[in-house]
Image 1: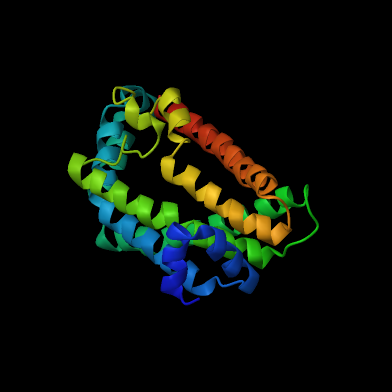
Image 2: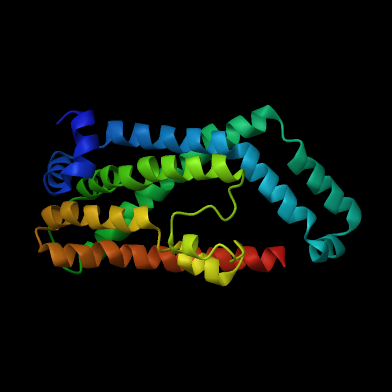
Amino acid sequence: MNFFNRLQGVFFDPKETLPSTAEKALWKDALIVLILAAALFTYVIQPYSQQDSINTFKNNIELKERIGEEQFNRMLDRMENPSQLQVVIQSFVVTPIIVLVGFLLSAAVIMVLGRMTSTKGRYVQIFSAFLHASFIDKILGAVVRLIMIFTSKTVMGTTTSLALFFPKLEALSLEFIVLNQFDFFQIWFFWVLGYGLASIFEIEFKKALFVSYGFWFLKSLLNIGIGLLSISFMS
C-alpha cells in the first residue's frame, strides 16, 4: 500500500490496513507526517496557548508571594514577549523531539505488555502499527481540536474527551484531568491499534485490546500524575 491508501485504510479498513503496515514495518513516511503535523499544530496554536499561560500566571497570587514580585514580573515579561526564534524552536525542534521520544517509548512499553501474552512480534512492527493508528488522534483529532481552539480562542479547557460534557469544570482541576483521559479519538485509536497488535503478536483480538487499552490505562495514570504536579505548582 502507498501512504495515502494506508492513511484512508486506518479510518475505513483498519482490520486489513494495520496488519499490513505492521507486517511490512512501514513507518518512515508515517513518522514524518505525524511529526510535521505535531509541529504545525504547536506553531498554529502558540498565540492561544501563550495567552492562556499568561492569564493563568497572572492570577497566581500565591506564586507571586512565594518568588517575589520582581522575579514574578521578569517571568511574566518573558512569557508575554517571546522571540520568534523561541516560538520556532519550540514548535519545530522541541515538539518533534518530544513526539519522537513519546512514540519510541510507547512502542517499547506496548512490546513489554505484549510479551505477557506472546513471544511473537518485533519492535519495529509495533512501532509501525502505533504510528499508523496515531493518524486517528494526531491528525483527525488534531484538526477537530484546532477548529475548537479557533472558535473558543483558547487552548485551556479545549477537549475532545468526556470533560466536554462538563463545561463548568476548571481545566486545572483533578476532575477535568481524569475525564480528559477518556478522549474519544484516543479510545478509537487504541481500538484500531488492537488490529495491528493481534496480527503482530499472533493473538486473539480481545487479548490485543487488553494490551492496547492496558497501555492506555498506564498512560492515563502518568498524565493524571503530571496534571497533579501542575496543579501543585500553580497553587
